[in-house]
Amino acid sequence: MSRNKIQFGRPPKKQQKATAFSVKIDNLSLEGCGVAKHDGKTIFVEGAIPGETVVVKIDQRHKNYDEASLISIETLSQNRIDPNCEHFNHCGGCQLQHIAPLAQLEYKQQAVLSLLLREAKIKPNKITDALFSAPYHYRRTARIGVNKHRQTNTPIVGFRRKNSSKILQVSQCNILPKPLSSLFDKLRECLAKIDNAKAITHIEYLQGDTKGALTFRCMEPLAPAAIALLNTLVNAFNLQGFIRYDHSLVPLADNNGELSYAINNINLTFGSGNFLQVNAQINQQMIDRAIQWLALEADDQVLDLFSGLGNFSLPMAKHVCKVTALEGSEAMVTLACENAALNSIENCEFHLADLTKDEPLRPFFEHHYTKVLLDPPRSGATELIKNLLSSSANLSLQPHRILYVACDPLSLAKDAKLLKELGYEMANFCVMDMFPNTVHIETMALFKKAATPLKKVKAKKNKSLFAH
Image 1 (spheres, rainbow, N blue to C red):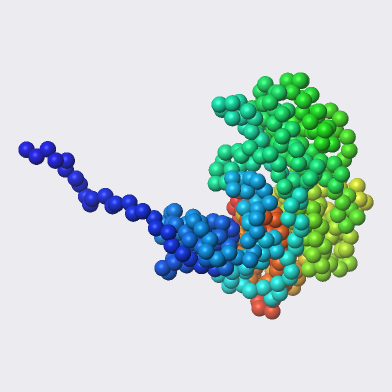
Image 2 (cartoon, rainbow, N blue to C red):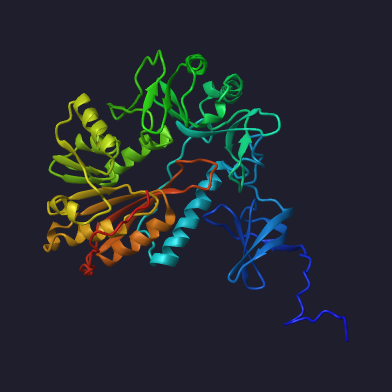
C-alpha cells in the first residue's frame, strides 16, 4: 500500500516574490497616498507625491486596486520638502509633512473636486481661494495618549503610531503651541512618580486665547499625593487642570482664569470636554467667509444646525433679524445660551434637538428660513436635508442659500448630490486647511436655489442618521 499522502484539490499556488517596478504618480488620494496606473490598474503608494516617478513594490492586491510601498524615488517633485518633525516616520499624525504646505492644499482641492465630479456629477460654479494658516503650532485641542512600557514600567506619553493603536513615545510636538514644547517630558516625569499612573488613560488639551486646560481621564481614584503632582504640573504651564472620572469632573486646585476665545468682538467661553474648532486662525477666516457667502441681511431668518457653543450662531446674529440654532448636546446648548447672555445677544435662540430624528424637528422646520448653515459630523446630514427641504409645500419658502461646512469629503459629495436633486446648485466652494500637514480635508460649499424645479424626495422618519 502506498504511503504517499493523498492530496485533495488543486496544488497550492507558489508564492511569487514581489518585483519592483517604476510608475509615474498622477495625483494624491483623499487618504494622502500617491495614485498611479500600472497595467490598467490603480495603485496607491504611501509617501509618493504627484509628478514623481517612483520605484514601488506591491504589498496588497485587491480586485480594483493595489497598495504598494515606496522603494525609491527616480524623479523628485519640486513640492517635496524635509519633514519638520523627528517623529514623522513613526507617528500617525501629520502624514503630509513631506509636501510643501501650499501644495498640500492644491492636492486636497483637486481630490475633492474630482470626488464631487465622479460621485455627484457636480462642478462648482466658482472655486474660491483656500483658507490656510501657519503649518505648525496651530492646534488648540489635542488628545494625548498615556500608557506604560511593560518591561521597564516607564510611562509612555504621545500619540498613536502610524497604522497602529499603540502609543508612540513623543519628546515634543510641533503642532501644539510653543510654550508646551516640554509638556511631554514633564508629563512623563510626573506620571513616573504616581503609583497607579496606569489609571490615567489619556489627557485632553484645550486652549483659549489666554488660558488652557489639561483634563486627565482616570479609570480609578488618584491618591492626594498624585493629585498634588498633577496640580503642580498644570500650574507650571499656566494651565487649568481637571480629573475626569466615569461620572464626574473634578477640578484641580488653583484653576484661575477663564477658558474662552474671542471671535468678531464676541467672547465665547467653554469648559473641559467641550468641542472647539482645532485651528483658531482658520476658525476666524471660516466665520468671516460664512458671513460673506451667506450674504446676511438685516431681515434674514437664519437656521444654524449643529450649532455647538455658538461659534457661528452668535457672530451671524449681529447681521440678521434672528438666528435659530439647534444642537444635540444639552451641555452645549446651556453653554451657548450663557454665551449669548454674556455678549448681550438677544436675537439668537438655542434649542436642544435630536438631529437624528424627523418628528422632533418638524416644529422648527415649518418656519421660514432665508439662510441655513449646516455643520454636520463626519457622517453627513442626508436625512436631515430631506426633512428640512420637504417640510414646506410652498417652494418659495425654501432657503435661498445653504452653507455646508464639511469635515468629510465623502459626506459632502453624498449630500451635495441630494441638494442638486432638490433644486440647489453649488455656487461656491473652497478647501480649508484646518489640519495642516495631515490628510484631513475640511471644505465649505455654498448652495443656491437653481432655476430647475425641486425633485420630490421622501424623508425617512425616525431613522438614526449619525453614529456619535
